[in-house]
Length: 263
Image (tube, rainbow, N blue to C red):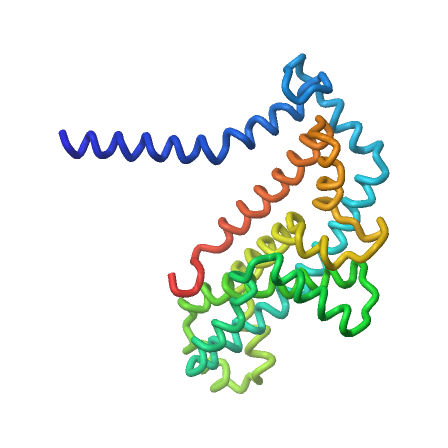
């Protein structure tokens, strides 16, 4: 009887937690299909607000900028993060110190990292734009990619690398013909995670975008729109961003069967 009560209590707590997390998101998604323009009164089902997004040049420009930054930052952070993960795993003697340095951007508050990047670009007198946002996102995403790939490396059989060397393969050949194919699911998962983080990231992009509207990303555009109140267009735009993030994260979780280093 006690076990039954404990189980029911755990289910109740779990239900409350999920309700706390997902009811606001469900309300946002539901109101994005509200025919009326008022965010608090349901007047009927409609998809017209999604169509209106296609007619807004500012939103389309911001969406294009977001995709440019996300694609290039994902490519760079995936390549660098994978190589970094392999290098750290090989250098196991200094692994703990290297992990501390590599994974610091994951735990440093975004605002601190954003200010540091802004200070660096200002010190180097770099004109800011999409390129500085991309570089900043690489710095932020690289640690996440490295973490995902390293989780895969924890179960990697290094004897196949030794066998490849015994058969006369060079280090580069072994890397591309043996190591990378085995790590590919984790590499793709890390890339999808980096893409999701880049699409959603606001604070770092806001600090490193520079002046003007030419480098505004989608989260920055949403922030600019919401200052005048929540509208159905914002709900529709947020729903699209949520959908892209959920799909990318689901694919990442499906491909990556491991966890973070140390798990």
